[in-house]
Length: 118
Image 1: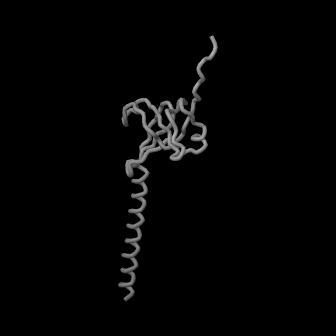
Image 2: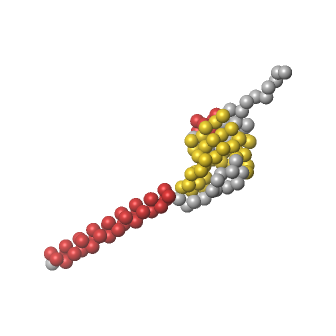
Image 3: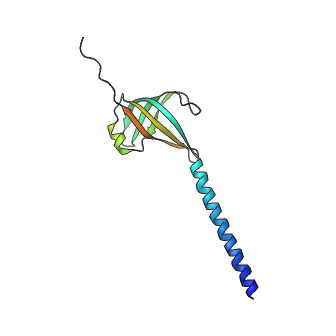
């Protein structure tokens, strides 16, 4: 009877270890589905209700050609500073797992006003 109980405990322990390994590997897989790219472009317009900015961006090597499209901005403080015409550099994060993307590490260069003198 003791041998049977020991065998059952050993099997239960092995199942617990397998369950933990599957959880850890799925967490790692989720992290590896994120791809990061450098983005440079100019803000065309803002969508405050969605916290998105339409940006005319340069080529993103290995990801997409130059175009104008909207991006979600993760950082509230930086979003509040954005204005149409601003130049931005940011990290474009793309999640292959659920086909979402957003910008983080936003650096903003304010648009310069046209020279009124001369």
